[in-house]
Length: 330
Image (cartoon, rainbow, N blue to C red; front, top):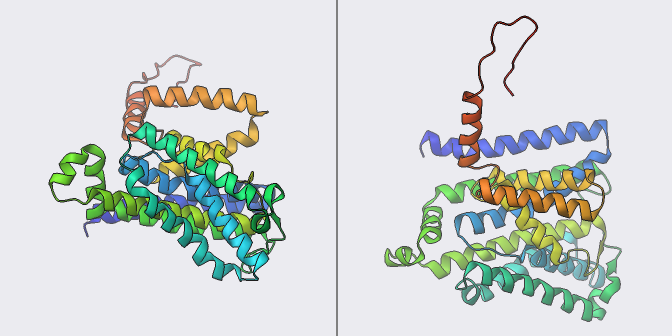
């Protein structure tokens, strides 16, 4: 393994670790920040695999929220209705959405990007209807209450913070390693030219199906964590809007970068907390999305944005020796 490859894998992880430590320090000063931190971590767990699927594989999925709901309801049913331990239910919460995604992936991933997005958001709506109708298992519209917190977390917010951010670190490292691997390069070839990738011997259907399944499994894990952290799960808890928001985070932050989805999740969470009302949020998020798509289609954390930033920095004029005037770089 070359030094550049090692750096490309470790650097994002170190930056994410720095973010987690900074949020932890801020949380000790102001405990309410821990809730924001856990939300960012939860969104990052959903956005990272979608960033890999969309940015590297070229497949737009709006099913992340649905697969998270499957994982959340699975652990809620198994722990509350059948008395399973949270860690025993984790296997099923991750495995069920992963298997389901793998089964439906082959026909879905043959569709064009827009059609795939429409079909996957329809899939999330189907999940929601199933959860609403299966009242004996899911509690219907009222949902399931009394979901026990994780033993390693309890009610301590700092433990929840480190649990979710440890998971984010692991997923981010796997993301970076996958991109640098032979399968990652094959995936990139599929995104650029699917027919050419097939002609070189790449099993396009298997690669995309495996990645779609992996993305769903990680979403199931995020749903498992969410259910035990909140202690309640209803069909409206993880609705189709969440899937659209996760895609927005990926597009905003950058779909071709490990850090992009995390940056997008952070900005979205902080803006949602600071901006008043859903109407104002919708106007600002919509305007921001237009700007990003027009000028920086690969997101904030992208080579295009970096080149633009460097160009702006080098074109700022030098200050003249005029008394009382001082020009500083931004």
